[in-house]
Length: 168
Image 1 (cartoon, rainbow, N blue to C red):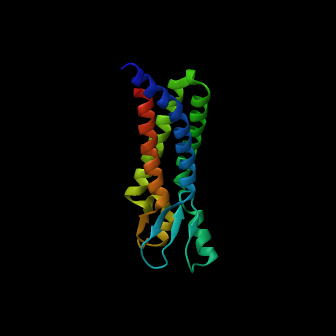
Image 2 (tube, rainbow, N blue to C red; image 1 turned 30 degrees about the horizontal axis):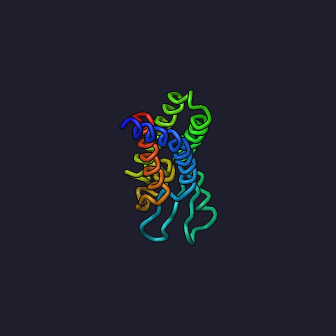
Image 3 (cartoon, rainbow, N blue to C red; image 1 turned 135 degrees about the horizontal axis):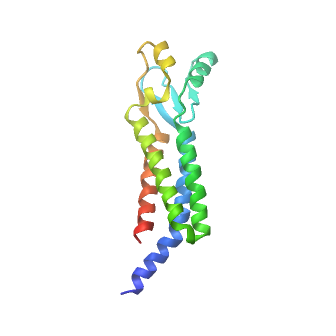
């Protein structure tokens, strides 16, 4: 019976660092993807790093919107990069397990909090006060897009994998 828990521990020790590394890289990738899309009219799309796409809009309008996005994905890019580095260190040196796993958990939680905050109400977390004032309350209804879904899902999976690595 003691043979099986040892094999489970070895599997978790071998699999968790590359999975955590993948989680960090996916956080960076999903930060570049669209975080919200408009439901009406020209259906604008905004990435986590502030790239705006509006079909039929002038380049000046798009530039104005891009200039006044809050770029909420910068936090998730940083968190993903930190998680990736900590996962590589964990993979390379098992002796730094606790510092690496703490950094990974805090990074994933930071990305999760940012993702859930924007997910709850995208428009005011994507655009600054100037855009909201310019549109005088006529901000288009924005819904979460696949990049934001990805941030939330990957963050949760990263926390779960880290928790399993701690428990086992």
